[in-house]
Image (cartoon, rainbow, N blue to C red; front, side):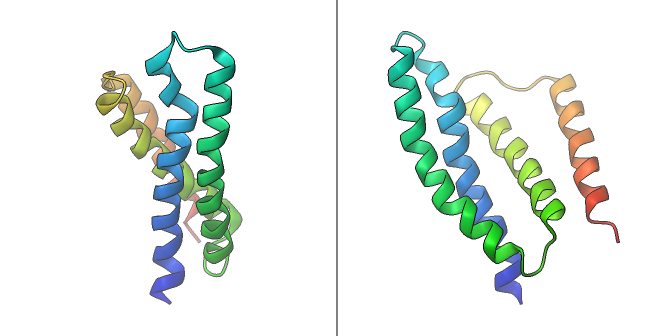
Length: 113
């Protein structure tokens, strides 16, 4: 039982680390050709999918699809917040945190029965 509940969270965390680098990592190298950024992002995204698909397969045993999606969104925001500050040097401002908090509240509502 704990495996089915916790494994999706761990896999989604790893998946979102890859996804965030694939989607936003190239912003640190804006002088690189766009096509190179696209191909590098595709390569990184492969590893995202290698974690995302099992996360959803395993998680579907105990969570609904909307719950998995809500969980994924909150994890994405947390990973992105750290990535933005640490990797891109763009810490979030109060309004970003407020917007993210509203999304977290929406995700929490998805888990109400």
